[in-house]
Length: 126
Image (cartoon, rainbow, N blue to C red; front, side):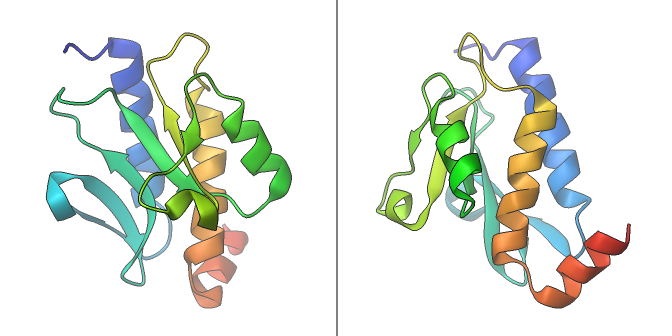
């Protein structure tokens, strides 16, 4: 399955943004790319080997953001029971998929839900 250049560009922008947040690290559990803060995942970036369509999964506690994310084409509550905790999977290749800027906003929202107060304060000072 070939990943479109547009989806790959979005994915790269989102990954760079996530890893630029205070204290963020990249890990590869289960062969999947994730960004963590304080040893906790704040965004699942999925597999980019072409075995699955590109998508990101973020935790959105803000009701408006959560509802908005679920209106994205193909978006759904995350699997493994994570959807109940506010996690949303947003595909990047669907027609009308969100722009990288909006995806980054959601990544920041997810980071703020999961990150420690000290690092969130550091982010706010930027």
